Picture 1 (cartoon, rainbow, N blue to C red):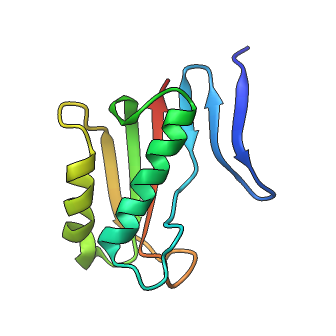
Picture 2: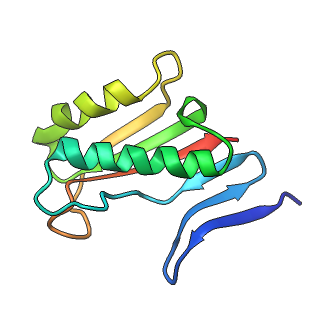
Amino acid sequence: MAKLTRIGVGPRLCEAVVHGDMIYLSGQVADKAAGQSVAAQTADILEQIDRILAGAGTDKTRIIEATIWIADIATFAEMNSVWDKWVPQGNTPARACVEAKLARPDLTVEIRVNAAI
């Protein structure tokens, strides 16, 4: 049976779960969302993803799948302007992006990824 390791365990969820040679991240939101643009929130989230992946011994070149939720689909291009600079060309993951009502009104973006270790 493959080992299961939880990272950043909290009372409701953890930041990520490592199972076998995969890491599954919880949805990440901006630490400082209030008053921040979609671009700023996206950059904050991607920094968090980089940190969590590095802590598990992997990086964004190993992301297999990404799901992005944005509060307003009209901000799709703004979010992508940050995503496109961050995602490694030639190693882009399978991805979905949908408009959704997020958990708090100040949140405009949430991103979840799964990656190989």
